[in-house]
Length: 587
Image (cartoon, rainbow, N blue to C red; front, side, top):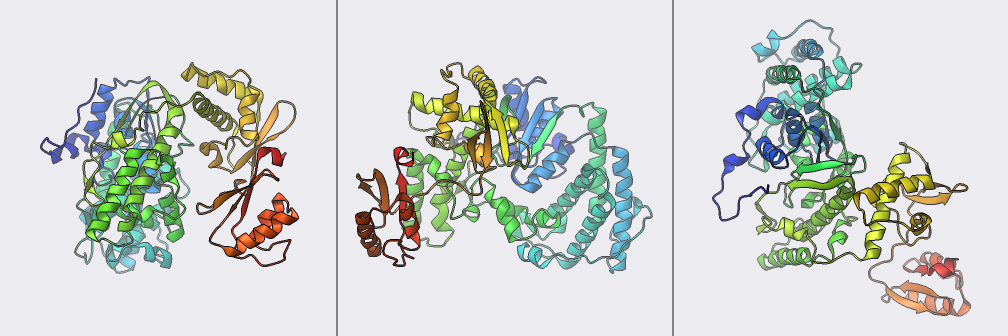
């Protein structure tokens, strides 16, 4: 049964995205602003007719809306998110096996210890709730402040000094009292702390973008934490009493463009990916991420940004290549050109606005990578629901109603060779995943592993068959095709022989590929059966090329011309020469 969506001509109903009162349990522990609503997930679950025998995936799980709703409905689920705070929250919200009595006792100790530490620093209790749930414990002295690097990451004015002190004392007390216990106990209370930060203690709000509010001289951090943690424990106990603890749910910290940790055989996908706009998801959660020690400096923040789908100008980087995946999509290139044209017409020349068209290109390129990684994970006839918004962004360009069209290429049927190569990629990926162990420098496999993977892929796509199993391996060892991205993400790797019908993925220190500059032209040297690329704007290159071709430099001598010409001895610091030999030349 198809699900109807609101068209642009229909009146908007903001309440459709609101969290219903009956959905507050567990969903309300911590939520991203504008998270899509649980009742929409229920609607898709009903439409897809999902049951206990199905496996549901949310590859952009955020704070776990799909996963929690699946668990409440007795459906096994898997989720992933590259944002560390999202993965933490989803993991806590779907773990219903935590001992409630341990949580209650730990909460009392946290409250008592935090209050005593705060009083010693002149931060007296502001709440009867915090005093009511306390019990005696020992107190240790320590400094409660952000590091210099953390302070640089914190947006100016987002936390007043006294609330910050109270939050740091509470965080340290949570860590001190839970460090030697099950990790899920500490995670549970850190999520409660994150809720307090985002819903009262901070000087910021959402409308929908994050903005700074009037500074708070002080805030009842401990009282808010006591009430919220107590409510979380009560709701957890209710779920346990309902007999839902046995419903499986897994959460991985994984890049949705790779899905390297995600299992297979999914019946359905229900998700809401980021939209191409100016919403920086690392900024809207910056304060929580810093105080929960999920990011500690600019390097760790950049690492998080690089793992996310490119959806805003603040996580676009020079080395990004996702846009290359949609270069043949005429519709997407047209949108990029329209956005850039509109920017120029309006005279907008800021650094961020110059990146708007790149955001769109990398966004859809990243989504295509995601869909490619997803395909081998799905069962036959799997159902997919991708929830997107109808907002205007990036020079008021409306993406609503275009996303599905933009993600669909112009009518084109893959050639038999292309389809065969894709199937072989999946075979190799299965072989790698079966034998890979964390930290391994070699991943051994046999031809029997290859045969087993071929049979598994053929089960999904009956048209796929191999006349010669060795052809699968040879396509990659001969250099005709690069290893699948899902494999190389943990590498780079190459395949090497290890005996009769025995092989191994061997980890390399650097990629063996040679990248040719875009501004170089091709010059054919028939006498050597080589292709030489050289920059026509560099006169020194041409002179060096003429001298070297007459003396018959070898392939490897040409490569060294990036520094010094072996024939002339002249410095070539500005020379950009690369050589690529044909397979026959390489032997």
